[in-house]
Length: 309
Image (cartoon, rainbow, N blue to C red; front, side, top):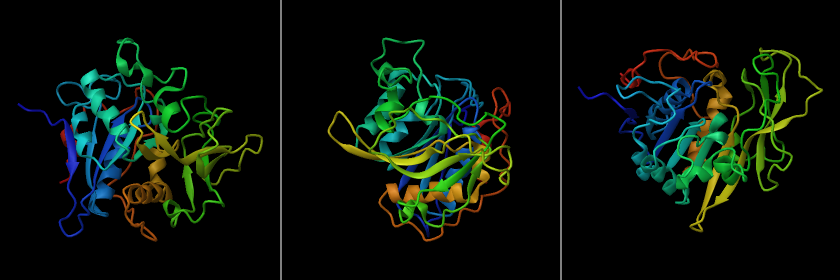
């Protein structure tokens, strides 16, 4: 019997905008296998995007975030107008990496979420031509090349200090920030390297809170850090891509209405569409995301369970 390998959310015919988004889930800790399907549902059912979500999985179609080498459907990136990646330490076969790199070199836009800054780790096939994207490469690999940042450190005390998003006043009128005011998430603030790129436009700064609730006071002993920024990436083909990076984006962070709105706004902006003044980001169906953690993903869930009924 054929096992469902990815899910596609078709928009209602009356609202279809002709744009296609491919969302890449595949991380061991932050439940992208729960958060990105919900984001895909919102983007498709409320905003007219055709959305396809790919998953790290075992051969029988059981979602397994710990499977770093099997993500069926990478060829679908060829038809995408936008790719959203929330990979972490993946090492795909070269045949599956090629569509990703081809997309990256196409000049099309991308969103890099949370662990997406350190999407790839090559321990099995270090001779692969794509090992240059390893997060530990001298230039920071995929994240360093594109958004100017790879994995560095937890600035907040992981699991004990949450993150408040502060809108940057200089970029307040950027349409990606339309009706984005109250951003909070239980995932902590990621630190950045001292050589964080000067050409990055920071939209949201992360303030560390002294606890795991949105009303907890800030830890004023910890500096604010960039958590959402825009940057242009010029590929080896000479084409330039507009990329948004958000180091907030655990599935639990997506309980924040305004963080969901920021991601929806970015989808409009990056695909060349007019951003709504206040996008409807009401979840589709129940959305009760699991807390982040290693080995805490829901066991035995099939890709087919994410089909929109």
